[in-house]
Every structure is written in structure tokens, then in C-alpha cells.
Length: 138
Image 1 (cartoon, rainbow, N blue to C red):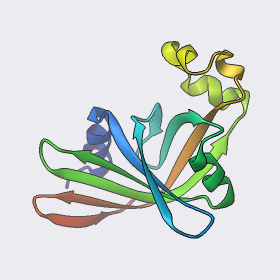
Image 2 (cartoon, one colour; image 1 turned 30 degrees about the vertical axis):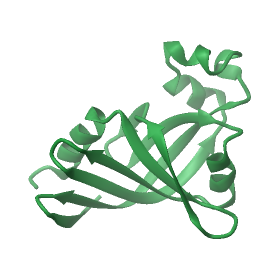
Image 3 (cartoon, one colour; image 1 turned 120 degrees about the vertical axis):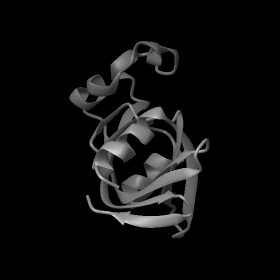
Image 4 (cartoon, rainbow, N blue to C red; image 1 turned 135 degrees about the vertical axis):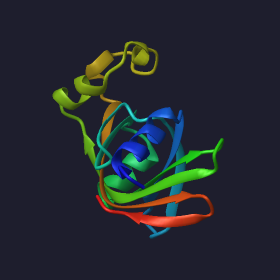
């Protein structure tokens, strides 16, 4: 792959759903579908919006280890990113990824206490395409 970050970034941007996993209090993985990221800095930092009251936020606060997976079903390829998640509740982070329609979910707007940002920080990547997987240098 010539430009892995560009190829993978383009694939990420075209997906409407991704899957995120956290580790629960008993040490078991939990996986959940999430809407596409709100923002990304290459493939090293990826930002999502979510509910502060969610089980995954509680899990990430106890154990920040995470994995996200983006799947392009059309071409049967995907990218798995392993890393950590920071739960951000500061004003700047919330404003950074806020979108017009979010008021539908967070009635108090950007200051809604049930609105937070997940900042995923990649430490490794594995790309699957053409029936083979390759590690991607970050």
C-alpha cells in the first residue's frame, strides 16, 4: 500500500458505522456499533460523540484499552485500530465535534451533561484486503 494513512483514512470517511470495543469490569470485551467519527487527525486520533451515561464510557473510564473496526462491505476490506480512549467532557472538545442535529439527542446543547467526546488514540493498525492482513505502521 503506497500511502496507508490516506488509503485507510479515505475508507474510514466513507463508512457510516464503525465498531468499538471496550473491556468491562470482569475483563471481557464489549463491542458496539457507533456512528461514523466526527473528526480524525490521520488515523492516529479519531473522535466520536456519545452519551456520558453509556456503559462504554464507564468501561473506558475504568480501562482505556479499546479497539475500533471499520468495514467496507462492498470491497470486503477493513481496518482494525487498537489503542486507548480518553473520555473528554471539556467545553472545547464538545464544541469541536458538535453538529447541528445533535440538539435532538442532547436537549441542553453543547453543555448537556450527558454529552461527551471519545478520543481514540491508535497504537497499532491491521488492514485486511484481498484475503490477506497486513500490519500498518502508524
